[in-house]
Figure 1 (tube, rainbow, N blue to C red):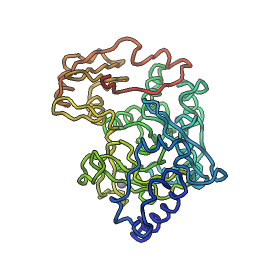
Figure 2 (figure 1 turned 30 degrees about the vertical axis):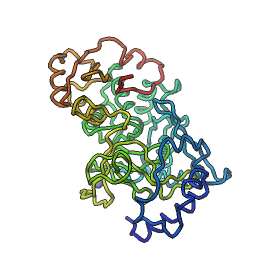
Figure 3 (figure 1 turned 60 degrees about the horizontal axis):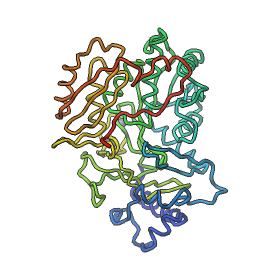
Figure 4 (figure 1 turned 45 degrees about the horizontal axis):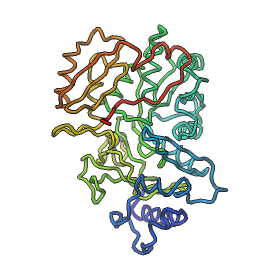
Length: 410
Ligand SMILES: [Zn+2]
């Protein structure tokens, strides 16, 4: 990666760009340019979600409108939009961030993109990455009536698609649709060689599950609408931070200082190269851990592990459970559920589980397995209706919707 002096230069350039946005013009008014240095990173202010919300859609726009190529916006479950502005150069750099991924796209790849194309960033970054490596693209957007699940499976087979990219949930639902249609997802798509996922938490066991479903390696990417792609998984399963474009910190809960290496902390993301809407120490409320790399792939960039969002963290008694912990427990079950949801209750967790193989489950056994793993009281309900998963809808023209895995108390 780049040396310290180069990074220092990038950091100073970032401040020159930040000064053009209304948000940072105000936020950084008290900072003397000579005091701005990487070594003083911890003295620089954080940017919270609330800061961005208050500043409004144009608040972090740092270029003139004539330089804007694309605007992105995503809405979380809370309904608060996250937004970003991209120049043509930002799109190119964003595509390059994905080229770090161990999938190593090449000119003879045909990449089916299942990320939603409306407003959301990942589809467009994946498309850039594919084009920049010479690969072809099949735009099979999720969340639309144009490309229901059976049509996507047909496209994959008929066009001999080599890579599919989308939300992890879409990979699970496509496999379930294949099963319902009498197709073997791990056998009947011989051209498929890899899967790229992003946009949802994906624990190690969930990744193994999707690899088993499709019989190909799965590469995860970590990013957000506001920042583009921060880390990408190499061929050895490590999420390497794209250090050319980002500084990633893991901080304690109030953001006042760093947590120890490898410990769970709150992410603060600084975009070093983004022009349209650059961010300084963006406190995005994600729980992450960072470790130095000793990876077999030879990449020197630090490794990032994502544990979920702070708002999904559940405390019961002494137990502190992140979405990652719950996901690992669920995906360790046998059979792995086709659909699941966990409800936070007064003194424990209630799991709703659905599997086409649920005959192999006993609610009591599963309850004690989950309770042992998570160290909290657990009740289990095995669902045999369409509440969690509408299988009739899957094989018909029903568009996909945003899944909710963890429901906190009201
Ligand atoms: Zn690696």
